[in-house]
Image (spheres, rainbow, N blue to C red):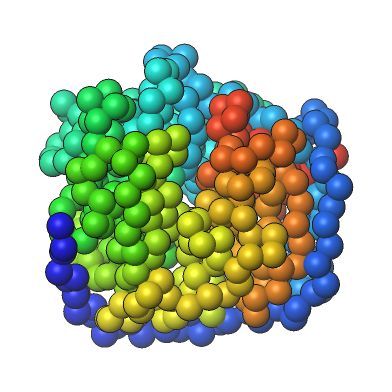
Length: 412
């Protein structure tokens, strides 16, 4: 079903603050590509106290961020004891302690129930740096505070807003994972893991991944959607469409109150999507906002990194899947994405279990095998570990949270 893009007029003072923030662009020179040998599993050592670092770190721009690390270690299982959910997708670090959230911990969302059927997972687990796992939330469709078409199947879209509010995407598959893919919603939970808002309809249609920019009492969510043109179809159909979108959602964060969605704007159209019997759907996945104001998007179908310039302020969408930062080479079905402290884009491949670092000028600067099994389709969510001590990522091949770091897990 075709949806008309909704455009929101943003307050001028907010735009001014965003322009000031985004004007601090960080340009990195191109570097020769270097491939690291596959890492081997070694026990991880971490510090007890961790600080979440925001913005560019003091890393040398002449070296790839990934080149500092050589060891893959398992931090924890992502399977919650409460119901055995599988297939970890989303990942985000906790920036501040409040409620159940502990600064330096990592949240992980699960896409599958214990049956391992896609689009039926309902849990978010919280994992401490020492590997201790606890349940942050178990989301039931019957207790949601608003509409979420199709129910609950938690996706890679996962972030933490000011005040400890967690936003997670839902792209459910009906009939216990054997039916059609439904539009879903974004679910807002408080810091105790209780759903307090649901945002659905309009431009939201299969929210698949997400990143956020926060300025004071306002936030902008950048969300990929993978069901436009594929609504209410079974994954087994294999239907494809070039109608995937990226939207920007403006959210108010009033002190002491729940977040308020003020509106949404479509900023990118024409991304390739394809229903898939083993992966539910393949489409635009990871997103990261560069220091230069460009939003990078992992185009999984076409093995490329797409670009949407002026993402925080543009009022009209870029068409045809946006521009291209890089394609092919080491990029092989990119899924999860994060921004390195030096401004480079790091993606993890669904095609081969590798992580690839790309500079803002499109040079593929480093490629490393972070999935020890080198298997395809195992990697989704990825983020920089607190204190820049490595790369945290989920491995749905064995349902774990892993860390790619140096042998001591030290900050860099």
